[in-house]
Each structure stands twice: as C-alpha cells, then as structure tokens.
Image 1 (cartoon, helix red, strand yellow):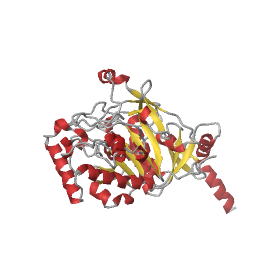
Image 2 (cartoon, rainbow, N blue to C red; image 1 turned 60 degrees about the horizontal axis):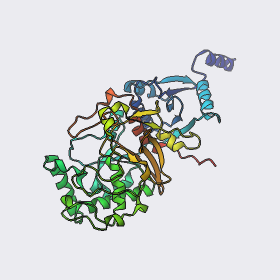
Image 3 (cartoon, rainbow, N blue to C red; image 1 turned 90 degrees about the vertical axis):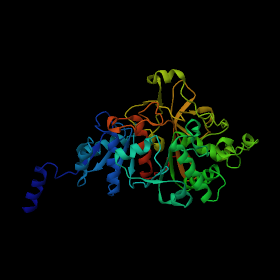
Image 4 (cartoon, rainbow, N blue to C red; image 1 turned 90 degrees about the horizontal axis):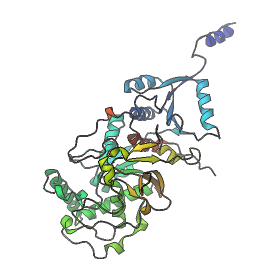
Length: 419
C-alpha cells in the first residue's frame, strides 16, 4: 500500500516524475548571444556536459538542469527555456533525424586559452580579447618569451591577432615617431638580443616555428587581421630575408621571391610579399576594401557557407549563427584573395561577387587553424587610437559569434568520421 501511494504521489507532483533540462536557444529569441557562450563555458568548467545542437535554432545549447545553472543564466542575462524530459527526447529525435541538416555535438572539457599579445598597451583593441572579456571566458596572455620557453604546451587554444610575424613592426611606417611604436620596437629588439637573434625578423621566425609545432602536435590556432597572412608569409620566408632596410638595417635578399617555400605555409601559396617599407600592406594576399565599400559600408557583407552537420561537423560548428549573411569589416588584412588559397583549405565565408574570402579553416598535422580577416566585426574601419567597441551594445553580433564558435570548438568530443 505504501509503494502504491508513493507512485501516485510522484505522478501528481509536476516535474518530480520526469527530469528537466535547459535549452539555450541561439535564434532571434536569445537576449544575449555572446554571454550565452560564456555561460556554456561556465558549465563546462563545473564538469557539466553540454550538447551543441548544430543548425537547430541558430546553434542552440542543451544542458542538464543542474543546481545553480538557471540562476547563472539569469545573472548573465541569457534567455533559456526549461524543458521536460519528453521535450528533450523530442528535440533530440528531430536533430538526429536523417532527413534534417542538424546534429548533436557533445562539449565536455573547457579548453585552456592563450592570447598571444604583448604586455605593452597599444593604441588599438583586439576583437577576441573583447569577446572573451564580455562573455566572461577565462584566458591567459602570453608572448614571445613564453612561446620560446615552451609554454604553448600548457594551452589547448591559441589566438593571434594584430601581430606582424615578419618582423616589420606592423609596417606602421607613418607612426615610427610615436611613443608606442618606439616602445614596441625597443621591446622586440631587446627580446631578440636576449634570445641570441641578430634582428627581430629572426626572433619572430623562431616564434612561428614554435607555433607551427604546437599546431602540428594537436593545438587549435585562431588568427585575425594581420596575424593571419603574416604568419604564413613568415613561414614561407623561413630561409630568406624579405624585410626592407628601414626596419632592420639591411636590404631584402635579392633572391627572396625565388626562395619562398610555399610548402611550409598553412593556407596561402604563390603570393608576393611587399618589399615597400612605406606600404601598409604585407603582400598581395590581402584584398583590401574597394572604394565603393569605403564610401558605403552597408554594401559590404559576406555569406557563410552551409555545411552538412552530420558529415562535416567541424565547419558546421565554426559557422553556427542566427543569420547567414554577416556585415563586413576591414583591417590591415581585410580579406584573402581566393586565388591564393591552397587546395584543401575549407572556405567558411566569402564575399559575393568578389575574389575575397573572409573566413577559412584547415588542418595541419594533428591540429587545426582558422583565419578570420578584418579587425573588429562591429567597427567597420577601426583606426589607431579609436576607443574599443562596447559589446554590451552588440549582444547579437553575428561577426563576434564566429569568434566564440572557435572558442568552444576545442571542447567538442571527437566523433568518428562517417564513411
């Protein structure tokens, strides 16, 4: 009799007889898309597994209704829906249906994140640092000494932003009398000498080799702006000198072009470096913005490709969004010339009607790299000395979502490839 009464008691009290879950939609219902990524990271840090529902309501997240989870979402201002066990089962059935271009990826372990950036204050911001800070995802800063001391092995995910790996100090020739430029040059030259290198380009080449080894050994690398093309330029110029005398005191190697080794690069080939010290450009990889778009940024946009969620989960993860078209933005490296991209590199987003790729991904050894052109997704033409973007005004930024997709990507449980 007691067992029967207990059974009746459980079915009469709503929620007691069936488990509850939390759905964090990432479609237009979401109140803060960027904070949602930080909330997922928070759950992973507490060993709470999260299911990423690829292509379902903008790439939503499904979490167990653990203690404190709902309260944390409310504190962060993230919209969520509490669902029953039967509702969860229905959603999973829909997502896993063979006829749908959706899939489930289990996120299990939060990646340890490193941002490669100098300690000095520079007169520009970094979109990834802004994204990590706003979404409350923890990270650590590292730079040349840390890389050369082997500390990359401590991290799962590495970000490179407005860096010049060719040793030309960003080609900021017109700013060479500015205090921040003088400090940047002095710091780099001091580090090079302390490490036994004759000049900064040799220091940066050694740093590139360490990062190359890190990626090949299974690391995840994400780069934006000049951190993309200068990384590959430095790899190709490993055995030659492409730096004009204005930056290092000696001339470009007369045979530099012939000495470029494109077999060493990650994403680009057959490019030509710029040997003009006064040109704010590193090579012909960068497409640069056409005048019409500078006059009217509203006409500048790029389109994300749609991939098979079940067959191509990695590019699908990297392109999750609540829109398919993202507004453009420029930088020292605004876009990648499609004709110079290596075969096998996956194009994630490109500009319609132009020879411009904005977003790409590839593998090297056991690891991966993702290159995202431009400086700030919510500041079309960010200048030196401009104030950092306030992301509380851009909670639904599709451009910033692409950055945060990359942050979560290493947390995914590896699935066996379908054949």
